[in-house]
Structure formats: structure tokens, C-alpha cells
Image (tube, rainbow over all chains, first blue to last red; front, side):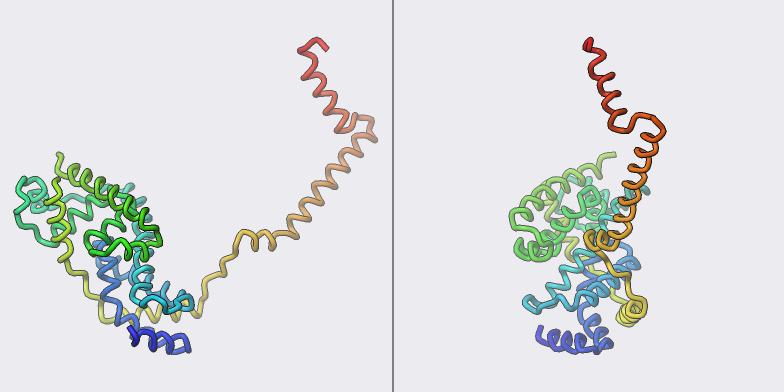
Length: 185
Length: 102
């Protein structure tokens, strides 16, 4: 986005206040990415703030070769990954929340044609994905929920395409196992 | 869980809307940045830089250990007690060769 280039130039030249404009332009995207990994809206806000502070610190490293949005996505995903690593440890301590009745009914039903709303689907996936490693969760979320290509996932995660493909396959198999485990009493 | 059901789960999850950033969000970010500018984070040092900083202290510690060793050895020799290398050779000959009939 050419407007971002001009805006970034102004910020680099000392117009700190213009950073708010940059935040306002991209905040929805950052919130959307982070919400895939954290369901608590307050925590999402904290993580988004953390992301933009990191962007501010690293602004000198952005060389403009890739669109700013891609660079921002990479930082956001890294913040999410760090968060998942911390949360994994904490969740092991406090245990898992339980699924709602609608979600459980859908999971137990043999008919996949049954309707499922977005909230219930995210609730199920959030719980099942806790069985995955943070890196596996990031890859499967980027691929299956955000619909990103392997090339894009490589750019965001900094992994090779072989590593991404292998991780995605493994994560998918583990996710299936985790989903089956959820319906067992 | 079959593939079709898993696909349905992913598709449904794609439609979930994220929370809307609050109106004060951009202002909060700017405040956080300003407070960081006023109170910058402590500079991070690499292992080599930390070793360089510690070098004078490490050098002095090494000198003290050497001086203490030499002084102890000298003191023991003066007092007629076998010095460190004699003592070690005595102990090793007792341990290694006594069992073999030497």
C-alpha cells in the first residue's frame, strides 16, 4: 500500500503522532489474527497493543520490499506464538474449560450436514487445538482457517515449504485425534 | 471425525468475527510508546559483551586463586609438610599400586 510508505516515512522522520494513523489502518487485521489464538477480548487487546509496540521498535528494520501488511502479519503471528507458548504452560496448570451443549451435540452427531454456527466451531477448534503444539496450531490455523497458501505461511513463520507441509499434515492428524477425544466421555 | 466434518468445522470457524478494536486503542498504543521512550528498556548484551564486561573481575579472581595456591604450597614446604606434587604422587602410588602388590 503506497499510502503506508508515505506514512512510514513521516513516522521515521519523527512524526510519532502519525503512528496512530498506522495503527487505525491495520488494527482490525491484527485483532482478527490474534482472535484466532485467544478467545478473551481483553487479552486480544493487550496482545494487539504488544504487537504495535513491537512494530514501533522494529520500524527501522522494515525495508519496504514486502508490503507493510505482510511484515505486520509476521510480527502479529510471532506475538501469538509467544502467547500460545506461555498459555500452554498456564493451561496445563489450570486444566481445560468444557464445551457447550450445542458444540458437543454437533460433534457427537454422525451427520455432518447438521448446521454449526461460527462461534461453536471456533469454541470446538480452540479446545481441540490446545492439544497441539503452539507451532502446529499456528500452521493449521493459517492454512485452514485463514486460507493462506504454503508460500504465505513460509513468509509469515520463516519456515521452509517442506517444514510447513510436514507440520500441517501432522497437525491435521493430531487435531482429528483431539476432536475425537473431546466427544469421548 | 471424517474429512467432510473437519472441513465443515474449519469453514464455520472462518466466519467468526473478531472483536472490534475500541476507539481508544490507537491512543493507548501511542501512550505505551511514549512511556517506553521516556523509560527505555535496558540495553540487551550478548554473551561475549557480558564476558568482556566481566573480564577485569575474572582476571583478578584468577590472580587471587594462583597467589593463594602458590602461598599454600610455599607455606606447607616451609613447615616440612610434603608439597602438593609430592603429596599427590604419594597418594597415587598408594592407591594405584598397593592393590597390585607393588
